[in-house]
Every structure is written in C-alpha cells, then in structure tokens.
Image (tube, rainbow, N blue to C red):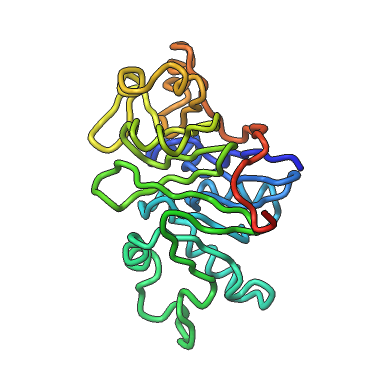
Length: 251
C-alpha cells in the first residue's frame, strides 16, 4: 500500500498565489484524509480529485484554513449520498471556535429547515482518533493563544504542524519515528509563526533534515529558504511517505 502527501496550498494568509495551506494524505493515490479547507486550497483539491473532500482534520479556525466550509456545506447538504457523512475531525477545544467562525449564522438556508452541521459528521477528538482503521495523534501547537491550534501525526509517516511557533518539546514526542515533518516557516518569524532562524536555533540538525517548510509569504521567499539548504514545499507537490507504523484496528 502506497502513502503520499499532496499539497493543495503552501502560502500564508496573504500569499494567495501560493494557495492557502492545505494538504491531503493519500493512500494508493486516492484522497484519504484532508488537512484544513481554505478557499484556494479547496479549489486545487477539486481540480485534482473532481469532488469535495470526504474526510477533514481541522488544525485551527483562521479563515485561510476553514474558509471553504460554506462551499463544503452546499456540496454536501444537497447531495443525499454525502449529507451527514463527510467526517470532520475537530480537536475538542476548538469546536466552539469552528462553530462561531462558520456554523453560527441564522438559517444556513434562506428557506430555513437546515442546520449548518446537518451536512457533516462532526467528530470532536482529543489526543488521538481513528480514521478508517488507523490511529492518528493530535498535539497542541503555539499559534496566537493556547489550545486554539493543533498538529497531526500519522506515526512513522508524516507530521503536519499547522500554524505554529517552534515546538521542540512536542516534536521530540510526536515526531520521533523518522516522520516527514511539514512545518510552518517563513523567512522571518513573528509572535504567531516560525521564521527560519527560529527553527535553526531551536531544532536539532536531524529534525531539521526531516522538515519540509510551508506557509511562507511568496515564491521569492521560498527560494531564499531553499537557498539556505532547506526543503521547501510547493503547491501541487506529491511527496511519497513511509508506510505508517501507527496502530491499526486489525492489530
């Protein structure tokens, strides 16, 4: 069984030309679990797969990561085969924030009779959850405010940090099995995002060698990061992943 990571977008909230940060874990070339759903990223997803995601993990609720939910609602609610079946895994701490951002509007349909979340199967998650028989891990990251942003680990295969400052302690625990680490990083850091000097200062060389940087500000900035010797993600990239060592239901 072949696993891969397809990048729908790699830019920050202002880098529309790079697509909003979003990725899909694939199994045998098919969409398996999608991470976030910004508008630009969702457009790239539709171009690739020809349909909306069937399963999502939400890292946090800034609109460049959840702005595609209204399109998702329309496509799912009016499709009897999808209504209520699109799985949305949401860290429990941010369920209220997600509802405030995208679900809390009087009448999801003008004619009434529909709740926004009728279109989805919302699954609040804690430190781990099961998806299609595979156990994934969830961990807190450092973005704006405690307990408002989270990363995702498919053990032995890939770690997705979401938006974050450096998190050496978390990655020592949640990226200790040789995983590819897709990490928030721009040329210059700020109080809510990592800069390359932050990562070079706080991460050991072995961890940095496994990092793939995304959420940068422009193509030129990506080229500067690459010139420093780092692996830089590009929208549309498909990265082969190692076979996960995560627990499975069969085991």
